Length: 161
Figure 1 (cartoon, helix red, strand yellow):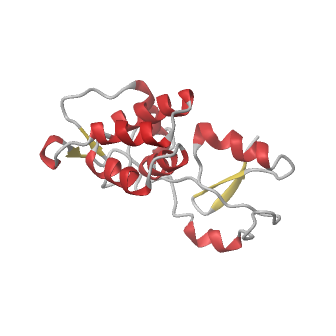
Figure 2: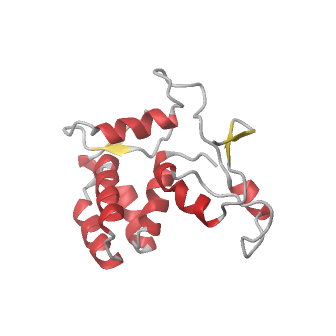
């Protein structure tokens, strides 16, 4: 299921080993582009949870140091206004906009939670619903190589190659 960049940030922080409270506070109190860059480094280098937690805490800023933006339709998106966006962050925003140069009337991601009850509790059923983590999707596909993969967008399932 395609979800917002913010949703992906929190999921990736938790998946990389950050504690739930640190991941949530990092999301609420950090520049999201800085958070993206740290998560990419942690994922690439295989940091442990303690190192990731310490690094995420170092990103915390006060509310007056961050500005809210609706660049992808997400009102919780935050950046430090004085810092230019890294190219990977621009790509995340464009992905949420579905590659368009103008903001769509509604974001091109969806709330996937209504589909979660369709998952078998042991994830061994014929369907597995998961959030779209872009570069991390290969891990799920490798675990379930016999299941076709689809992206749910705008109420439709689109088969992935």
